[in-house]
Image 1 (spheres, helix red, strand yellow):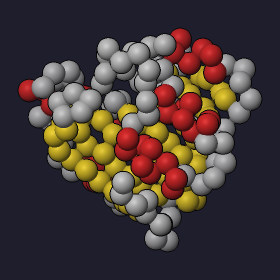
Image 2 (spheres, one colour):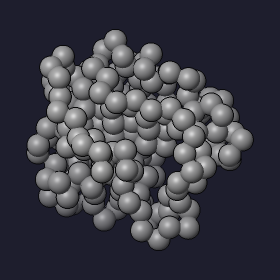
Image 3 (cartoon, one colour):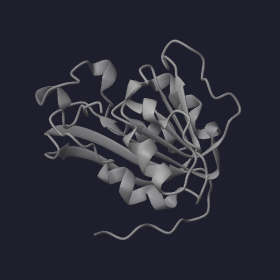
Image 4 (cartoon, helix red, strand yellow):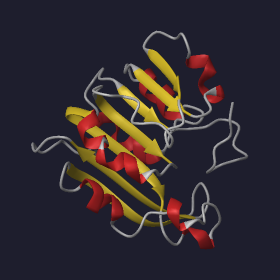
Length: 189
């Protein structure tokens, strides 16, 4: 199984605690897109929760075992050199972790079904002092996810700051819903 950028020595990859915390907001049994899925830790997590999943990445070797599994779809695509490959498809959940390609920001809200949930977390400015990524093109500016999605989606949760586990990093995270109705927030452990 492929190793995680966050925990390169970890033999078993667990889904992001952020994604797990808010996964219950994704409408039950609705289709989930794991964008730039890597080893598919989130596709596997949502499949285990009863969701049909679409896992997409430029290198799908980490999710080869999902090919042919009922309810799983694997797409090999260079997400940065092709047009949005999902056309008019709509998802109940979209998960993006450790990946940033700003041109997708414009299409993500419309790719969510009404009531659908965007779960995103990636690196932010200041991360360069801790390690990769260091390139400013791959680091979010302060409040960038709020600016990108706050007008089109209902922001349910947002974080920006330094974390120490699984390794020191500056992260920005957002959970947003396509809809105006308040959602029941998960409790804290």
